[in-house]
Length: 224
Image (cartoon, helix red, strand yellow):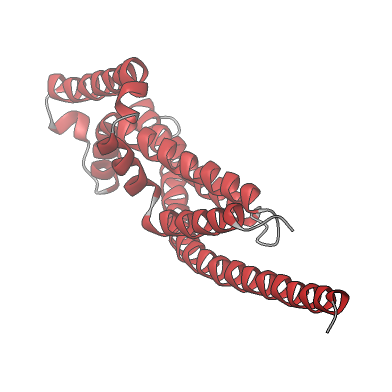
């Protein structure tokens, strides 16, 4: 066997090795993306569930608004709740759009960007939910009692009602100030990063981890 034959055999073996590496990479990509899809399908289910729970709230509060259109004491609290429900509905729809835009056949980097956009949206939505929750307590109180046939403004002292409303506004304003003043410092701590990951959702975190593993493999793979 001469040197040229050895070169040919070596080239053939190299081609087989290259084909094997490509096959292994394709199989790993398929396996990781299947796990990613599975995790995001679970997330999608809970988003659809949240949306399904929000629609009856919109209908009920909308009916309440129609019945008390000429009564500002009840219409305004109902309107606040209605706007909050619309915000939740919009957030759910936006998340579903972001999920639908993920192209599993596309580049891993693009998939990671889509997942990060979804993660940041869920964190922002949760943050605003916590910030506005104290403000929504009084409108919810008024609307719920009125739906049960009780005028909360007449039953409870006006000072107590106004105090609760002002307290909710104060808590929301304080929360916004803390978020703007110390947001970067807080978000940079390992503890808060863990909290934000938890807020983003386990399914989304698992999906991001699967894609990150795939990205690391493709980075370490030899250029082809």
